[in-house]
Length: 123
Image 1 (cartoon, one colour):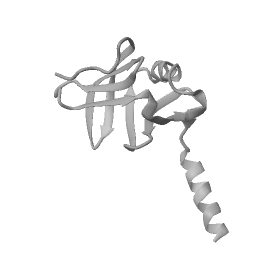
Image 2 (tube, rainbow, N blue to C red; image 1 turned 90 degrees about the horizontal axis):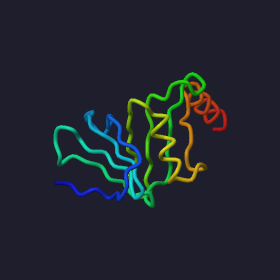
Image 3 (cartoon, one colour; image 1 turned 135 degrees about the horizontal axis):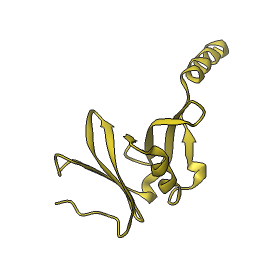
Image 4 (tube, rainbow, N blue to C red; image 1 turned 180 degrees about the horizontal axis):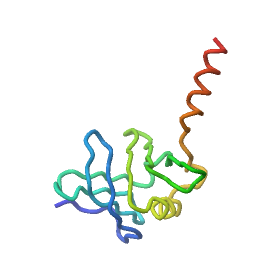
């Protein structure tokens, strides 16, 4: 059985992890870490201490009305992508432990295209 890093839990919600194959489980946000536990296999879990979180990246659509997924970029281990039933609740809970300046929006489709065109013009 996996031991949780959190002493107190602020939010527990159903979620999906997009690490390779989609995995369904629950996200736990607490005072020490962001944790994802797979609902089928207890050996598959993700624990990210708050000290390790570099950025929280949210994919925002329709001027903030819909957030399909969000990602947590760590200092050493890479980026972990998640989706949940109520992403705004999750991001508000994360904001208590991560500096709001470290929570950013991802680039939209047209922003990526615009940047690639500008990069080609500079060459």
